[in-house]
Amino acid sequence: MWLAVDRLDEAFQGNIDLERSALRALFRSYLDMKEFGRIRLKLFVRRDLFRRITVGGFVNLTHVNDRKVDIMWDNDDLFSLLQNRVKENHEFLRDVGLNEDSSPEEVFYTLFPEKVDHGNRKPTTWTWMILRVRDGNNVKPPRNLIDLARKAREAQLRYEERYPKDFEKGTALITSEAVKAGLDALSEQRVEDTLIAEAGAKAHLIDYFRYGKAEHNIDSLQERMGEEYSQNNITYLTQIGFLEKVGGNYKIPALYRAGLGVTQGKAFASSTSDSDEA
Image (cartoon, rainbow, N blue to C red; front, side, top):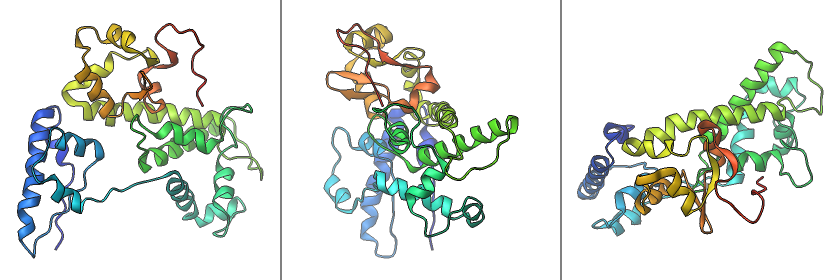
């Protein structure tokens, strides 16, 4: 018999200290129940929660790590996931001149343009998408990629309701403008359902960055956060993937920018021009 319980972290939403105590107790229960041969617990925990549980030390952590398996998604895994999802629709493949033997590249570039932004130095659409579904910890959840593709499709459908067009072989079904609109929609959703929801009692710290610039140094962080600036709060915002440390500065990843009205560039004076990001 399998008994599955989901969303235990949401039971303590808004109280980080209580959540940490409860989840640490869950891990201790996991270790205690190892002595029972006919009962086995399997815990599926996000990396940020695991770090939060074990920060400051955890008794018998080695026994947990002995059984811990990291579920990793690299770029090739994500590319395969996306094109396999598309290949499940046999009617669609037939309509656009593809089949189950079509290469992943053929499938992808039937859907999406070669590049979102034009220019020799600009990345391919796939690289562009991967850079924008990641958080500040370089975690790229498959859900973000799937939702980006869905929202780009929805944006394209809305456009074609106004300006219908026929499919032309060799022309991407989804335009670069629709991909960008999809990212904006994804960003707004992830800010609300992931970033702010998981920040709980510290969600107000994120509001300090609304309508600002994407890159900060210590001075601009202090200016934005005022009395609530502290290394502990900066560390927390880094741990949840909102801030990414780059050298001596910090960046807000592209995933969260549109949802917060954040624009590309530095929030501090610099002798060089704003970052030429992909």
